[in-house]
Amino acid sequence: MPGGFIGVDIFFVISGFLISTIIFQNLDKGIFSFAEFYSRRVRRIFPALILVLAVSYVFGWFALLPDEYRQLSKHIAAGAGFASNFQLWSEAGYFDNTAYLKPLLHLWSLGIEEQFYIIWPLLLWLARNRVFRLLLVIILIVTSFYLNVSQIQTDPIATFYFPQTRFWELLCGSLLAWLTLYKQGASIKIGIGGEFGALIYGKFLEYDRKVLNNILSLAGLLLLIYGFCRINKDLSFPGQWAIVPTLGAVLIIAAGPEAWLNRNALSHRLAVWFGLISFPLYLWHWPLLSFAWIIGSEFPSIAARIGAVVASVALAWLTYKHVEGPVRLDRHSGKAKTAVLMVLLGLVGYVGYATHLKDGLGFRQSAALKDIDGDIGQHEYYKYITEHYRICTPVSIADEAPRWEGFIRCIQSKTSSEVDIAIVGDSHAEHLFLGIADAVPARNVAVYVKTAPAFLWKPEFQRIFQYVIESNSIKHVILTMYWKAYLADVPEGSSLDKEISLVIDALTKAGKTIYLTDDIPAFPFTANACKRYRWFAWKNIKCEVDAKSEIQQYERYVVALTEMTQDRVDVKMLSTRGYFCDAAVCSMVKENKVLYRDYNHLNINGSFFVGRKIVEDNVGIFD
Image (cartoon, rainbow, N blue to C red):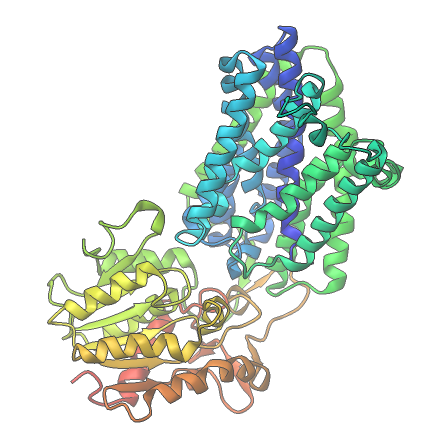
């Protein structure tokens, strides 16, 4: 389902409801213990988590290439420290292509949950009584939801991953827990009699309580179905859209065990069984799907995905039966068991971090090299840039911007502040920088990058273009993006040609010569498949695709871009697709060198290849 990922939001509500109920009850009884609370969390979370992290590390030892193993090890360390959400935020977006290459991507939600439970018991303990706790919950819900809605447009990635913009979902479960426990004394007298509390607890006017519960559960179910079908990765999520799964979960829980849906469907033996194995199932499912993608070097087939799901259910049951259950339910030696689990998780995290520092232990024989040259790793690309070029961030572009508006990278080929050629766009502009700078060594080339699609309507891009317009030294501007993603991100009511025309008009009025480039082909497999034969791979990737299928995506945007150059003296079109495609196929290998570092980004050799070809095919281009 397009909105399958909203299961995380449902989970947040359930978690907030269950744990807050326990805390409220223990505080009322005067038996709440921080040591016992966190000890229970350790016994609940750590056993299965340690197992999955350790198995991922061992499997990765044999299956992953050095750059992949380096990334996995870093994510193991972050997962062991319940900081995966921060680590993933620092790397990229949740829905970018490389998300499927991160076997521990899903641990971001566990990180947020545990971050919440580090501070939540203390806040409730300080509140002391029921009324203050209710006020605390309401204030925090309003604050967190406001941050979520207000920041979703300026920095959607941070809004997705940061705890302060997600806590309101757990707190909705906490609010429901408070209302469920204290409903008998929570009626609020208003006006000329009557009880406002009756509306909350299912006794409004003449409606039967069971009827109302059925209405609540059905409404909740419909909201969830709507969310699964309507919400997708192209929407600004969480934002206001997160209300749909959150409210749906709240309504179903509030309906209680008397509602027909809850009594007959959610209490069914099969549903309860999946509930028992839900945590290890959560831990296992994504690594299996991700490893299937990595090893196959392309999107897994339906059969492979079904097999991964079946395997994750089997592993979840075995984990629950032989690891999670025995450790969690055995009450003997609780303190010692907690200490051992903490040490083991710490050890797993340390091994992951050490492996990351050792660049993924390149001595491992996880694949055989093909007879193709060229570094392909993301790590090698950025390492080369930092060693050979100057990192720059003009104050007028980034330093004055609010922290949450995102980052703008600036790289230039010379130390001089007088830039001659500016390349502007997203990461697809950045991967042209090395080649252009190398092809015109006499010029100072700079690239200004904001890693998010869309041009003028993003404030970050407005600052970039304003800086370029005001620069007297910049005479040539290359505009390029991941056009396929850009088409999906342009605001409703706008269009590709309209947005780019606004940019071109502003730049040409400032006396700049504009170069629009098309985009290099995007492939359904990773560049690693062209470089090495994997031990666990079930087929050999030829490193090429049918040109007819690729051109369909190409024609979606190239017509609009070409029209931009017509009747404009200062606007030229630079074509790069032909460097990779002929009439039959598109290939990421040229001159016996792999030119990509993933699915759609050039590596060092690729950037040099394209930059050289652009200058050779357009003599005097930057005169």
